[in-house]
Image (cartoon, rainbow, N blue to C red; front, top):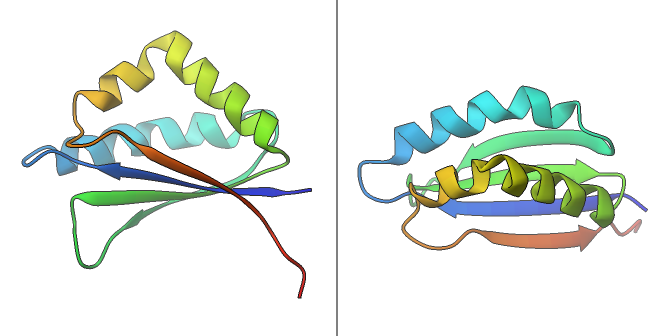
Length: 97
């Protein structure tokens, strides 16, 4: 079953553009990872410092493997230095109604 994921990042003051640029640089590689279906970067209309990734993966395991890959590379540590709060992930099952 396809797993939809929201990944929410809240940039520290003055770090929004740096965060958006960094995520944008990572997206092309992310789209090539095993199980990746799609990924989009969105900005909260009410809080421009809140960046949300809308992702679809073949499975939650595919996404978790991807996050582990980013941790091993040190990418997560780099992202964390730009955030006001820890990132928030939500894994969702798509309902056919």
